[in-house]
Length: 436
Ligand code: NAD
Image 1 (tube, rainbow, N blue to C red):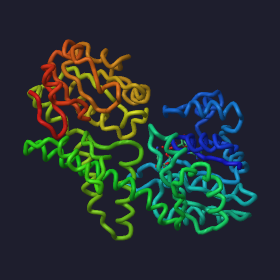
Image 2 (cartoon, helix red, strand yellow; image 1 turned 45 degrees about the vertical axis):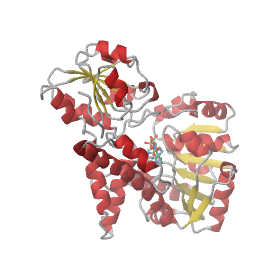
Image 3 (cartoon, protein in one colour; image 1 turned 135 degrees about the vertical axis):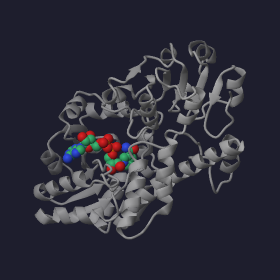
Image 4 (cartoon, protein in one colour; image 1 turned 90 degrees about the horizontal axis):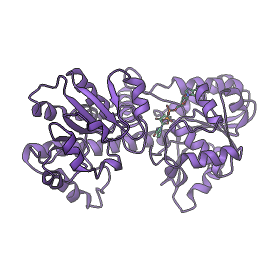
């Protein structure tokens, strides 16, 4: 099939590449001319495991193409995916200007039947809005489908190629059939394509993300409570997670969720509720608790240094909002770093993939190191903010030798308390005993 993808970010580029991988001919459109040129030259502009191999193969086979021309994109595809940003607006709602702006162009520019597929995360009722906007100018038939994306950054290629489910929200039989045909190669193992109405599809995405954010937040509260009463959240987590009704995943406490999706999606669902006079009280609490959780290590750091953080040097391991991505949107590390900088501390950081993105934001305030151990030179303490695998089994001897205050503040509970204690290092983590 001929496919167009409008917006070539984490979702759009993975969608375009994976659809090309199954033999479709794909044109990806982006307004960022520099990015488009890079992609035409064979460069993958984001870090996403395994994407480079597929990208390279399909670019060379000319099944994957890039342009800045929306007109070209809209003419090309029989199916047009919208993978556009829906960032948080000032009032917490989802900013639909990108999606509706392109919808306006679609109405003006299409001249034959197209299926417009919304992959962006959008509030209930957006399909209807998109339809109305296109309809104003359209000279031909079209259908609008809601097809929310559930890929996880860091596993995006795998998630797209082998999705646990595909949700299609549409009232058009013709569009549903086309979508099923397109996705057939991805569900050969029997995972379902769930067809529903547009509104339910739109809400499914918000409900899933908000539920996961709530699960993480619930566990963070349990961890905070553990610290008050001397329980060990690791034990509690294991005890809970073995209950199949609960499950083991998303029970790891830490310094809060971040990223480009959970924070904005929880807020957008909360805001959408308000618009129809429904108060999502649980989401209110999730937003509030998570905000506080991002800096939950700060009082421990302050107490350790007797509230004298001026000129203290901190090594920070991990900047991305989670491992296996270079995405730093709403990354908890940045909130904690901000607080430390405000108190006059100095930061030297290392992240395997996210340093360039952080450097653009914090050029004057953070020093970056080439390796995780280089950050420790002359540092008073080590702070861990992202659970990258390479941080999991460090050479504690080296750590101890380099840190002048011999202390680790771990926002991701990477180490066994006993192991660190045996090494003679002070260790503060989340929801567990502090080793002083
Ligand atoms: P992104 O910011 O990485 O990418 C968006 C791209 O769209 C950028 O390259 C930008 O230059 C381009 N763009 C903006 N306006 C444009 C226009 N008018 N025409 C063409 N291109 C334009 O965003 P993303 O992370 O890929 O997210 C896209 C949507 O998918 C959002 O609604 C998001 O909530 C949702 N989503 C994201 C993820 C994720 O893990 N990132 C997962 C599921 C769903």
